[in-house]
Amino acid sequence: MSEYSTVIYEVDDPIATITLDRPERLNAWTMTMAGEVIVECR
Image (cartoon, rainbow, N blue to C red):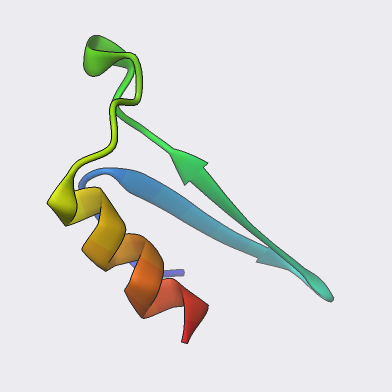
């Protein structure tokens, strides 16, 4: 599992879960979050 500042990435074979983790901003989408999700989707 990788460490990110705005997403939580978990794998429970064969399922991967990406959870948005910015509760103080109601999980508003940011460019940082987009980059973190893109890295994990590769």
